[in-house]
Image (cartoon, rainbow, N blue to C red; front, side, top):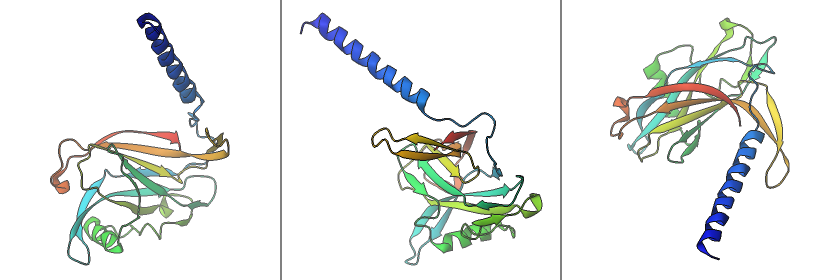
Length: 207
């Protein structure tokens, strides 16, 4: 194959790949601009960090977000929030996993909010109206390497779902309306307690 034909072949391959990616992006389900199902009112603080010692006396950093959920829908509903943290370095942590209860106790003492309940207690029926708001906290262990950005995916806040076919198995997959929060952690972290956190606009996605 001469150089001209090789160049044309490579250009064609790039265009085909771009078109495939474009079609995939267009086919990927997106939440409606208007909620098609019930949705809870959700508010939260920026991520904060706390250093807690384990039973052996070794200190570990944890990230936590305090939040409030209000049911302003037309009826009582189950509240089963799930918080997933993903970093720009590829870390993925599910809230509460590998988090000892002593970490929650330390956060509760720091926050000093008598209305805040544990992540386990918050699961259950939530009555209608602001008087029955549920306040709790999502907690993750922090990686030991430096990160510059974290995304928090919060599911269980809406009843909107969409069914798609898995691109490989072709089996049906149910995706849920999920709130995505993005936070920048600029610079090199040496002490999370003094770390600046910059909040970017949140958005709804299907995940």
